[in-house]
Amino acid sequence: MSGYTDSIFSELKKNLTFKIPKILDHQSLADYFERQLFKLAKHPKQARKNWSEEETTLLISIIAYYCVLQNEDYANLVIYNSFRSVI
Image 1 (cartoon, rainbow, N blue to C red):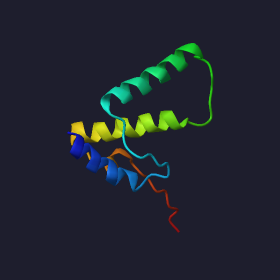
Image 2 (tube, helix red, strand yellow):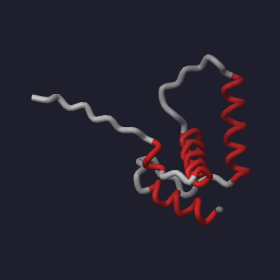
Image 3 (cartoon, helix red, strand yellow):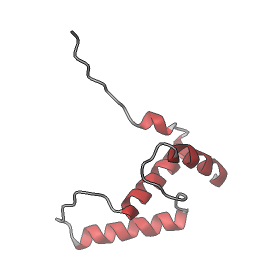
Image 4 (cartoon, helix red, strand yellow):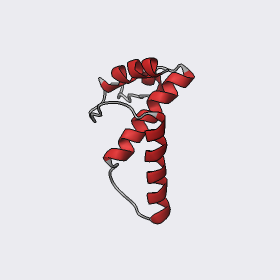
């Protein structure tokens, strides 16, 4: 699965403004998630405006694994609606 995940990630990476060298392996994914969960439990009412680098890396890795496991094209995960005024 790693080779296929890497190919999905290389395609996904072309469309990201946030640059990460590689997706997280399974153990790193679990570690990142646990750190984020701990931070949330420690400060449950903390409102933040921006995502941290670690949170963004976690999300991108989860998306890559989801696409592999569900055989989904990452481009289909976002629905873009363009509202144009008709004149």
